[in-house]
Length: 107
Image (cartoon, rainbow, N blue to C red; front, side, top):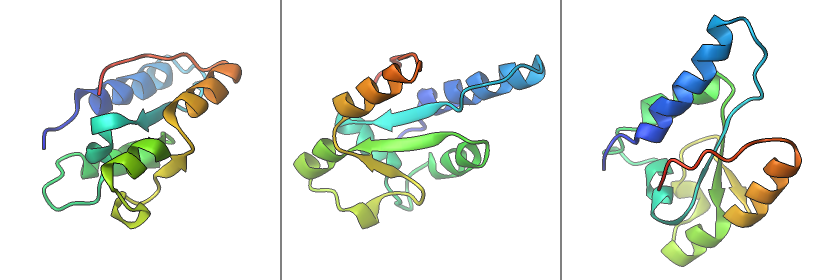
């Protein structure tokens, strides 16, 4: 499993408004499809420390419930603090209706 560049990119999204003393809408990361594996609480997951730091900084993490079902992933396999969305499309629609912007960095 590789360290996901999207997690580092989100760290920059958090840092830049703070450096400019500007307000920020707490960023949200949603994992779907194969990306769900990057949010599992496994010993060989290099993303765990960065996920914890991002959560401490106010980033919310969601995972697609449909991807979990299709991938045979149980809720107890997720890293702590990860919320389950009904589906990625549903969550994206809700967030966009709340004026969030989609920045697709890939799975």
